[in-house]
Length: 466
Length: 89
Image (cartoon, rainbow over all chains, first blue to last red; front, top):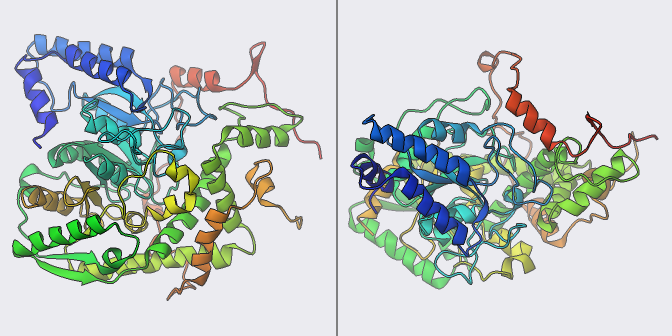
């Protein structure tokens, strides 16, 4: 698909549409939607900003590419003065006191925020059912889950309710819902985009991730949000990715894929055959294809969840109802903390906090947490060696098609295992893009660290190849 | 402090118990072979070098930020923000 950002920009510049009518139309669609994608609408703010864009057009002033482009924000990002609930009971009345760096950069470029989007509470889930706002329904088949945790964001983009949305990806939370709803979703290299103002889930893998309908739109948004930020010291300075640099696949010679992902008993037979057919098409274009060895899926999933739970137990310990949140009073401070957290956290969030505290406690940390860290190092080393031999790694996004609404909540362990193909790249902090092609839930394109450009380059190539 | 703390106390969640779904994940880790089990976070050192550390500066919050922080506070009485009764033990 063509860049929607460029198309709308041209329509605004040519005065074929007004920004106010565009924003009003999207707001109406969001308001009426039955997919449960909306936590709160930012109608007053959006219409005010749209009027300013229209005034600028009327005066004949030059319009920036993102000026007047409506977008959505996963409800875990701070945007000053708006409700930021993390889809949780604890923060259902919490208002952001400041704005996240990534969101501020989009505002500075003139993009217009429309909506805070439904997601799994605190990012804890792979189906967007763990939310107080009702399960997000899949854009293609509403009986199925929207995917998670950035489910509302992916569905809004797929349904054209937003031109693009900003999700958050810790273990696959942008890439998996993008795959389930047939859109593009990028997890950039860790540190490329500032996490300041993104509610922390697992700080060592949390990434800001754009969701859109074309590679070009992903490129535009990524460039705007990237860069070093003193408020997040894990960020690094990156170069702008130029459109002409990703227009062909020159320089990409060898493609790898993980043999054990495809030979696993857990993979759906159609996803497997479609993936292998895609590999054949890539081969037919003259690329060398290499089968790679990788860690077993259960080790990847267990390593990821062990570390993510440890980090989330620490990050969420601040949520005790003292300074903000839905405090429930009890006989003393300690009891107030406990009752506030017990009553306000969802079952899945409590499961992860308890798991995290288990692995961090004396007696368990050596055999589980520290071993998890060592495994992560080994996984990283594996990637480093792989990228000496291949330029790109291609993978399915998920082993299965989206489950029916209700099924994931019944079996949390099965839900964890469904993240088998996404979590490894999170642990490696590698740039990975879901494209809506190749299998029913798409394909993931991964390159080495800081090589986000190569990912977009190959995505552009595949767009016309498979 | 040598007192043994259970996960419900550590997590500040009443009646919390370890779950079977999560324990299954931990079993996999316990049984996994790791080539460098003595290493500590070699490749994932996200710390910042001393030269890169930002200056320690005090930034005054805007009036709007202060107003929202106060608005978010769960309890107010006669213009004062009220905290829960402190622990006496």
